[in-house]
Length: 144
Image (cartoon, rainbow, N blue to C red; front, side, top):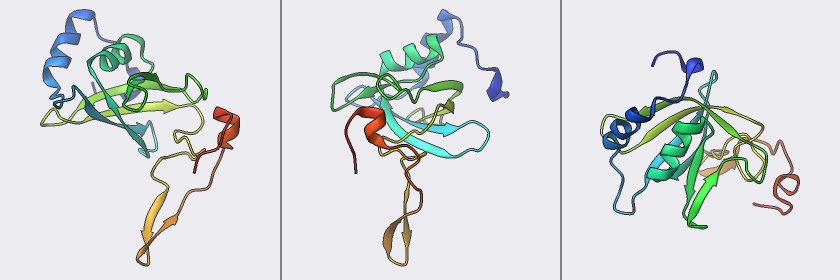
């Protein structure tokens, strides 16, 4: 697939080929990097299990596995900051996924566009991205 804007979930028989190409770790998880369609900005990294991959491919709405909640995490289900899949890529070793997404609002629970808002500057980590949306409006409580 070369046109990231033309993503359509593949037919069901193709799912098993995709799953077979993924090298899930001992916990049954694979890291998935979410990248913004168009700008190429890296938004976040989260984990997916087989079920999250299949749901994402079936629906076109990105679903992850929450290690803390030990359950599926449909991006945006509580915050409204949904991700729609535009392209699904598997790296050369099959051990990392790249999801090209259309992101509604912010991707980070801190209210920033990207989870990668801290950068090494002059030997220390500086915040290089401002809060765009107050986290309390997304989740009803604040995050650092």
